[in-house]
Amino acid sequence: MTAQNSQIAAKDRIFCAIDTTDLDHAIDLASRLSGVIGGAKLGKEFFAAHGPQGVKAVAAAGMPVFLDVKYHDIPNTVAGAIRAVTPLGLKIVNVHAAGGLEMMKRAGEAAREAADKAGVAAPWVIAVTILTSLDQNDLDDIGLRGPLSERVVKMAELTRKSGLDGIVCSAQEIEPVRAACGPDFKLITPGIRPAWASSDDQKRIVTPHDAVARGSDILVIGRPITKAEDPVAAAQRIVAELG
Image (cartoon, rainbow, N blue to C red; front, top):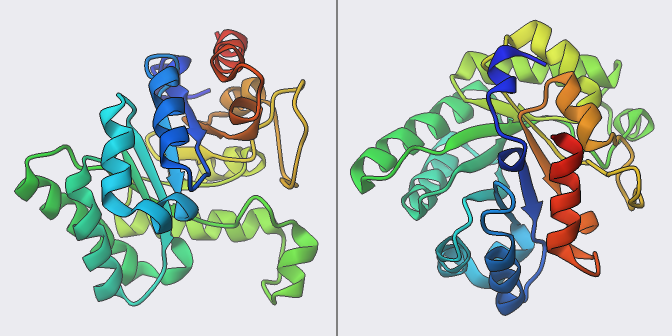
């Protein structure tokens, strides 16, 4: 665990993945989890159904928002998209590192400019490296040769060069990324499963405690919380395990 990493309170590390098209359910869940954990991750499924107004509604429930839309397009288009969502007051927003250096540079610049104009704090703009649903065989199938961890580190180094705040990566790549990119580079880790939860469709997973021990800053946890009989109790159990 880095010195920078250790400064984050246990509850603030956890962002709940609220992957639904049901706006009322999302608002209810965000309201119940407000103050219990650090924020809500809203993905493409939610954003496609409800757009910026849906994000505002969840944020109004008291939850910082990680808008997980993984923008990946030509630099001008991605910059425009980031410029459009930044006034929502996001905590985190992401792009794909595979979009390249110029695209990432433009995304970071757009976020800072739009935040200043809107009078909100600039979000962390982070880059997706390799999806946690993919393993080495999947990378080989799509023509990305070489060890998975090396691909992640190379993309992380490009992200840092672009001036973005950090990356999304599995906990299994945290240590080599830290070595390459330093202690202040933000690491957001999906594919997190408590020992008492099922793995579902994630292939590269670790427990919350192990992820933090390796140096993760933010843990994205979905179904172990959202599908629990008591989501608040499940979230509290995870926070307690981290503490």
